[in-house]
Image (cartoon, rainbow, N blue to C red; front, side, top):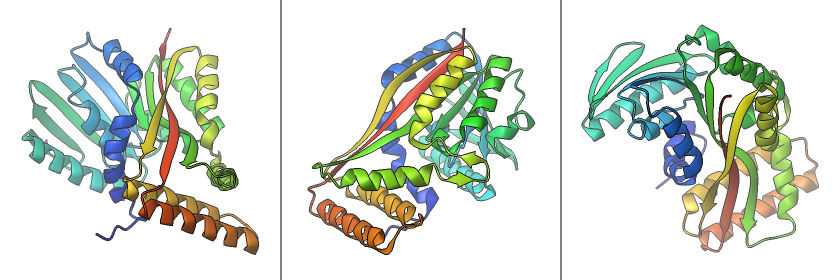
Length: 293
């Protein structure tokens, strides 16, 4: 089957199972327990993508009434999210009512109101009532955010006493079997993650450390544990996604011709190893749950 590795929605669909397996159970348990005594919960899912966080947590959360705001920058992502949540409800046999800007999902004694908002985290107050918000969730988002942006965001969490559940915050990629040259190309990849952009410099692989620093500075209590993708020898599709992202990112840098040739050779070797089922890839992340003292 041919896969379009440049299609972000297919990528989000494919990574769902790997994310679910990687999420740290201790952090998840603390998050769920924190809200377990409440009949209702108000959640903003930042960088909601195609609704994977909602699909993952809806049944796990004990709250009978759930109010979700799914925040995405791109209109196309919101449309894809709507389609996938409709398929999710149909597959599960849930009752679903839809309007232009929100869904109402009923299932197993639970009721979820889902609102779709186009925007970004910096305009959070334009998309949700911070006075009633309980928690912001975000999956694999904050490596794309600058230190200054997260500082502003953390200040608002403290001001309104809102919790944060941030999962799969990128840290490092490793390839097995180990090769000394791998470190060079991982550094190239990290350089691309932290390249200057309109909003500043993304936190990239430093996001966990910098998030912890800022959350503590803003007087939040913080729990952190590791979360890891371990792509084994037969996880070839996921491995090819990782190699594709590495190749695209590195070729986007201003490298010399010899560096680009080295990159092509390195990528080619890794793809051959993947095809022959002799490659494993480990992508280390962290999961963070922060809450008011």
